[in-house]
Image (cartoon, rainbow, N blue to C red; front, side, top):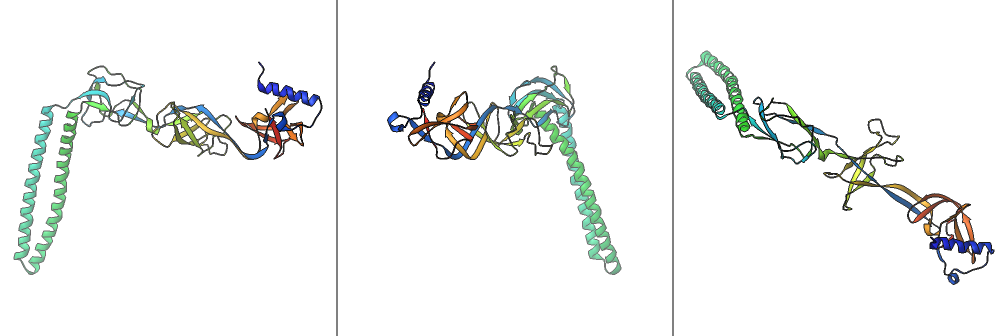
Length: 344
C-alpha cells in the first residue's frame, strides 16, 4: 500500500538523483516548518493494582461472655460500608439476668444514699461540737472535723466506684440484650470469614474475620524504567475518563532509603479511593530541546533525516534522534535552530 509519505519520499529521491536544482516552496506546493527550541513532554498510561495497607479484625467484643452465631449477612470478597451487617447473632443475656442486675443496681443506689445521709449527719454533729467548745477543746474538735471530712471523702469515692461498676455492667447487658448483629466498623473488603454452624458459641473477644480498609488503600504500578519518583504527582483515570490526583509515596528510586524503596511504585490518592484505575504520569520532560515536527522526519538506509529548504534548494540533513512523541522529534545533533525543512 502506497501512502502519501512514501510517494513524497520517492519524489524527493528523484529530485536528489537529478541533482540539486533551485526550487521555490510556493511553486512546488511544499509545506515547510522550522526547527525550534522548546520543551518536549510525553505521558505514559499503565494499569494499577489496588493495594490495601490497613486491616481490622472483625471482633465479638460485648463484655458479657460468648454469643451464639445465627448466620452471615455477607461473605468473603464482598465490600461493606460502615455500619453494614456482617453477621447475625444472639446473646446469652436474657430478661431475667438483666432484671437481677437492675435490682443490684437499685440496692447499690439505696445503700449509697443511706451512706451519704449518715456521713452528712456525722459531719453536722462534728461541726456543732466545734461551735459549742472553746480553747483547747475547740482546737481538738476542729482537728476531729478535719479528719472526719478526709475519711468521708475516701468513703464517698469507694461508694461511687462500687456503684459505677454495677451500673457499667447493667449498661453493658442492656446494650447486649438489644444487640442482634455484628456490623462493619469501616468501609472495606471482607476477607477470611471463619466458618460457624448455626448456634455455635463465639467467645467474647474472638475475631470472626478480617476487614481490609478501603479508604486507607493505595495503588500499585510497575515502575518501568524507574521514572516515578517519591512525591511525584500522578493522575488516576477511571473508566469514564475522569481524572483524580494522587502522589508517589514509595518507589524504586535509588536515592530513597530502604524503608521507602520498593520494586513497584505506590500511589496515595488525595481522596477516598475505590478501584479500577489507570495511572497517567509524565515520563518525558526535556527543556530547551531542539525540536522538529515529526511530519518533516524521514528515514532511509543511511539513517534519519530532514529535507532542508535553503536558498531555493532542497538538501538532506541527517541527524541523531533523541526522543520522539506523537507530534515532535527531539534532535540531539545534526540540526540547527531556525532551519526551514519540508514536510509532506
